[in-house]
Image (cartoon, rainbow, N blue to C red; front, side, top):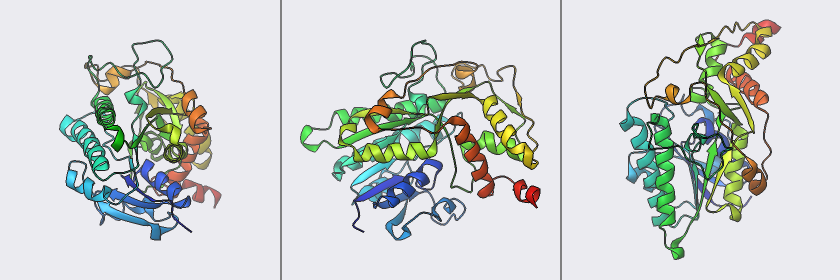
Length: 340
């Protein structure tokens, strides 16, 4: 089968990256993926079941190494910049710096090597502003004049720098640029190692999670996020656009727990997770402090209209994640014992 071109997927072994690579390979693209360590078999396990493995090549790259990223981009037709630290709190130099500098390096290398398309994976965290009561859309951003969580800074500033670079490209050198802003993403995982958006469900099922914060999430499904990336790549009219990518449904953290409890307790999983009454971190700019108990409303009409997206229901995404975590060995398989 004739290939459709070579696509670089940064962080190809991650929760998002592995699903994006799977879809690209199924559609006849060559995929070059970046990973931090090609010798870490556990971290690369998500790539074992990808179709057409002969069309996948791996490069080691660090987000803080512009030379690593440039080598990976050279010779590619398109870039999907997915890799970024997914850490809510901590040292800004380890979260904000690699997110911003990595995005800057990717954009600059893509321009230098005349890449046709760059798709950037951002987040609804770079859209949500809980201070306003209106329905939020792609024109909205957090209020960066007020203290914000480190992760909010990382996603917002890295997306901002990408837009700044894109808007300054001379017309004769213009590449296609699209941003996908996923919600809190559930759905089946291909990874065998823990990851942030799976922590609530994994912890509930293996008994290590005892309490959840009072946080409200716009829920998406990883399969839908992957499809949105590929459709954004293939549709010329997506150029210069930003897309909120979520199901249209919302869940509190405790709602996610209830879905998992209702589905998996029948198999012997003892799920006993409480919702915290008080925010344990009320510091200005803390992740919990800025989001605790607050709701918001987003619209996904633009992505449905432009990219023809239809979305998985949040409950189905949560349940699919639970079963996949059993299959990947992230939680004990009590179903097998229960059935036996």
